[in-house]
Amino acid sequence: MHSAHEDKRSPYLLIAPAWLFLGIFFLLPLAVMFVVSFGMRGTYGGLKPIDDLGAYLLSGEFLHNYIRSLDPLYWPIYWRSFWMAVVTTVLCLLISYPIAYYIAIVAPPRWKNVLLALVVIPFWTSFLIRTYAWMLILRTEGLVNNLLLGAGLISEPLDLLYNEFAVMVGLVYGELPFMILPLYASLEKLDLTLLEASSDLGANHVSTFWRVTVPLTMPGIVAGTVLVFIPSIGQFVVSDLLGGAKSMLVGNLIQNQFAIARNRPFGAAIAFELMAVVLLMLFAYAWWSKRKGQEALW
Picture (cartoon, rainbow, N blue to C red):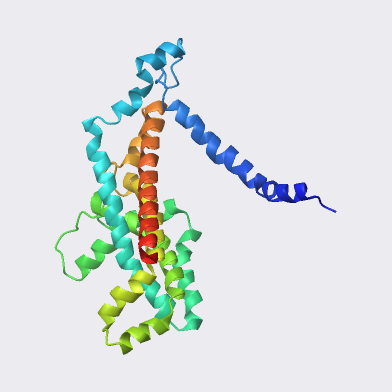
């Protein structure tokens, strides 16, 4: 026979393994990197020993990496990362919505699982291999140039690789499934009788789409936007391989600090600033959603 005290502890005991796992493998590394971000680079790439911690803190030197990250030298990198993440998110949304709409509403039921499998199949292979495949497709002697030359549309190969266009193609391709799946989940729950009611009341297809379909699938749109925007703004593999290191993003800047410059404190400081910006955007959206929800109730 269990006592009331044991019953109260049961939920905490059940979630304890999850909290322990998150604490060791997620929060602890973050805490270590947060502390490192306030350190100084050593002569050979490690951390410079701090002889007098009190004097170090009072002098404000512990903020050196965060202050350095605001140097105008890095603003073009931040701006390029931001607009490329925004454009990637918008393109993914424009491409994914018709696909998700077709799978959820138009496609015959027996084909839905097949179409969803086609969306998920790219996950079965390494993202690195898929990115290398795009290098073969976009290079001067690649598939695209050969098709255009064979069709007589161009007289000489186009420079499709090692530029921002190639980076954008890689980003959109890599993040597309993360937009399609949340949209599909929202569209599948859509009550089709509401669309019929809108049509019966005289609304055309465009009006029904903007006034009924889009608002009702807004949770999927927002979820897809978050899932695409966050990894896009921190991406570095795509810009390295398809951009030829010519289009440096903030992810490349962080990677270079750890792998090449061996300035871990500066790399950690930029990483935490990026995380803070993303969290602020998520909190701003949560605040906006809550406010919109309260207005809807009134």
